[in-house]
Length: 199
Image (cartoon, rainbow, N blue to C red; front, top):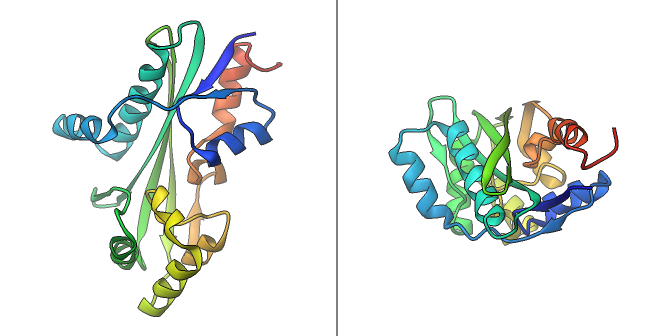
C-alpha cells in the first residue's frame, strides 16, 4: 500500500487524518514559507493561488527527500471580498487589531491541498469557506484573546472554530474541514482512487 506523508507537524491536521483512520507519517517541510509567499505574490496570485502555491511548495520539499511516497502539502489563506489578504498575526496585539478589522465583515478562507509523488505534483485541490463575523466589541476581543492565549497565533484567522472561536461568527458557508484547513472529503476520494485507503 502506498505510504502517505503529511508535509507538516500541524497537530490539528494530524488529528483530522488520524480520526478519519488515515495512516500517515509527518515530516516538516523544508521550504521557507516567507520566501515562497513573496515569490508567489510577485507573480500576482490571488488568495486561492497563494494557498495552492504554498501547499505545492511544502509537498515538493518533502517529496524531493522521500521518493516513493505520496506527500500531502496544505496551506490556508484569508482574504476580504475586496482581495485584501491577511497573514498570521505576529503577536497578540496585531491579532487584536486584525480581529477588529474583520469584525462585522465577511472574509474567505481558502484551504489548499497538493499531493506530490517523486518530486512532481500529481493532485491539487482548493476549497473556500465564507466566514461572516458578527460585530465584535473591543472588550469582547480582549476577553477572547485572554481566554484563548497565544496558541491562536498559529492560525491565519486567529480563531479556532472548533472551540470558543465559534462565538465570533454570525454566518458560515463552507465545510468544517475547510475551515480547519484540511478539506477532507475530496482528499478521501483521492486517497481511495490512489489505493491509500480501501474503496
